[in-house]
Amino acid sequence: MDLLILIIIFTAIGGILSVLAAGVFLLLPEKQRNKVLPHGISFAIGALLAVAFWGLIPHAFEEVDPARFQVLSGTILAGILGFFVLEKLLIWRHCHSDSCEAHGDEHEHGHHGHKSAGTLIIIGDAIHNFVDGVLIAAAFLTDVKLGIVTSLAVAAHEIPQEVGDFAILLQSGYSKSKALFYNVLASCTTIIGGVLAYYSLEDLHDILPYFLALASSSFIYIAVADLIPSLHKKTDIKTSLHQIILILAGVAVISLLHGIAHNIEEEQYELEIHSSKDHDMKNVL
Image (cartoon, rainbow, N blue to C red; front, side, top):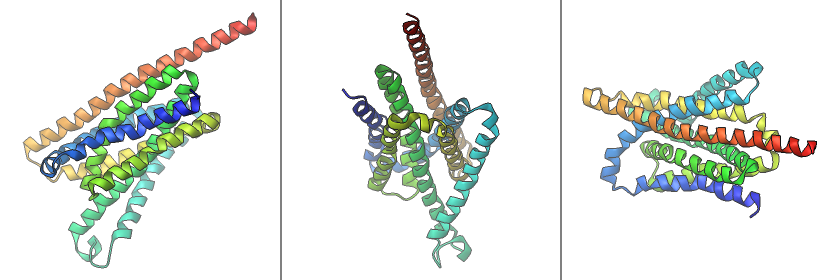
């Protein structure tokens, strides 16, 4: 089968199918979903921070020249500040003459704040999924079997994060159908990233670390600025312990899946070395 077709199929598996698998969360009855929702927010915090600090940021620094470390760090900082400004603009856009903090209605302002968090999670997911598509394509261009395993690892990595994203979107006021639609739409960038990488991987390689940095800054900002403050509304010991445990669970799941992905990357690196040695031996002969 043509390599491009394989990349399209497996980037779809890594992106869209992982969203649909996580969408099972939406099938829960509303009463149970509302009960599970706060727990999903706590889990999402751990998952988002783990993806940012153990996945995206280390990968970004591995891919860039040490002389560019300061620029890359500045990109993360600029991304966090940029998402703050973007959220402000989104809140102002929804701030009508009688429904924002400036006019004394804190409840409505809080609702708009949650709405903007939903918008930011979609943007951050789109960037992250694009990078996943590039990584899947890079694996396929190295070895077809490695590409298949990598795409499955990406799908497994995305499912728990997408469950958290659904929880965030529902809390932000999105309907079930809209939450599913926008998550599927954001996951389509996995295919776009894979196709672009197939045609121009060398050109994308130089800017890939900066995509990773922007994706990480969006996840950090959402977790710290939008989600963590919502957990402070309940301060009793039992609820606080549940929140801490679920945050750690989110970190643990992503850490486990990242470890699997790291092993795959090491296999990819070894394959590249063996391929290079075989090529050199053929040239000698």
